[in-house]
Length: 571
Image 1 (cartoon, one colour):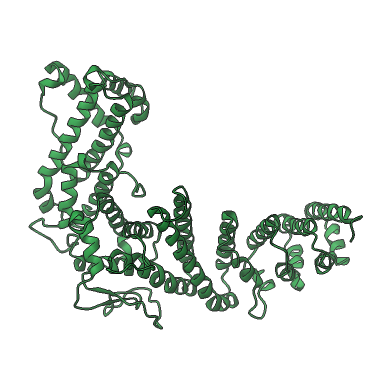
Image 2 (cartoon, rainbow, N blue to C red; image 1 turned 120 degrees about the vertical axis):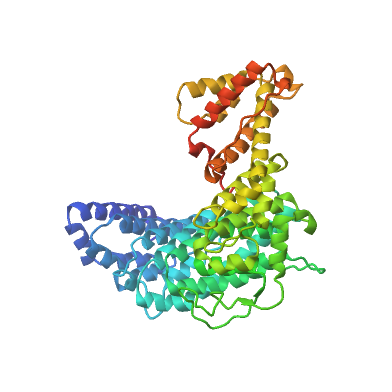
């Protein structure tokens, strides 16, 4: 090949791919000719000549990608994969300083990985050498996001293949890969921490770091969901002790000395919340919950040889050796629970409390992955059935009802999370709700009426437009209530006392979202919300009667799904 025929060779490569794909569907002679002339070897010879022609390399990779993706005949595919040709191509020393060439190479591996199964894996895995995996994972932390995402897709497709030889390879190599992945996660967490406190990076960069962490968590959870014991143990042995416990949990308790290995407490809480909402692997969820909630749990980060049990034995309280139990109190549990119940006493903020609530919600949603004894040992949740607590005493339930009673003092997302937690806890199959309702019913009604009163105040500040539009939509029998549509049409009245239109609309939207939590819980707790009493400051009594009539329609016409408690991901 030279400068005179290079373009012709590149065009020939493209045409060969098109002809072979057409022949695969219409005439087998095309591929037979490809086999007879051993054309694949000529492809590889172009690379072996070390021409360093990037356009030729890109076209060759595109040609093979097109063939692999579009050829349906297993015989043809087996030929492409045979004689170690693909491994030779995968292992070739390309000049990946050219980003376009690297992008095409990774895309080719991704396409190739979709063809991996028990019948094809042995074409790529020979004598414990598997360049497909080793070359792809080399770019797991590449600066280009699409390349990182493609590498994760490639590895997932490899991990899905059920093959003994592959499992033997992964038993040796996957711990190395997961160790590097966890080290990369730690690095991203440190950069996110620095971006948040303003030491380095621009503020907008923190969102990119956060998205990267969340994406990797979702990827790692997919690996756990494959239920491969080899992968699960290798991943757990790196993720749990080296990131979740050593970085996130250990960062909860401050020290007199500044530890470079720790991150901000609020960020650590947030990361733990993300873990509980994304991961569902029982040993991870249970042992991490123990570290946070068990009164006498102790973290042990020393590695031990052990077999990962499918369920807890009677003489064990944890799945892994990283959680032990002794007589001293767990400082991480004390900090977490204090932030949850009395944030000001430990110098925490309402935002920290909100994040702890989200973590609790994630733990409760994973309750099937957690041994029931942990609820008792945490001294936080009410005892689960068949145990009954006659006095209705529960610190967390007390705090949640106090939040509802004073809901105007909290962010609406916090109120929604509090409502979601109560919804889970008051499941009749979990606790006996009677003693708790007897104790906290009045707080709930007080909060609900206060919320309804704020909604009425918002109506008055919008003139009659809110109540009129509400009646219009309800009378029309529309499914649900288009809150944003109604609010967008409002115009503040003179009673708004100079408030901006957006402020009035925002207050009404907040009041509707807040009252929706009370209404949703009232169905679950079987508590009736009484009507508001007449208040002369809101107009004539006849006007008040109109308000009550419309608000009753407002309540009874809403479909329950429009009062659904907000997502726990609103942080």
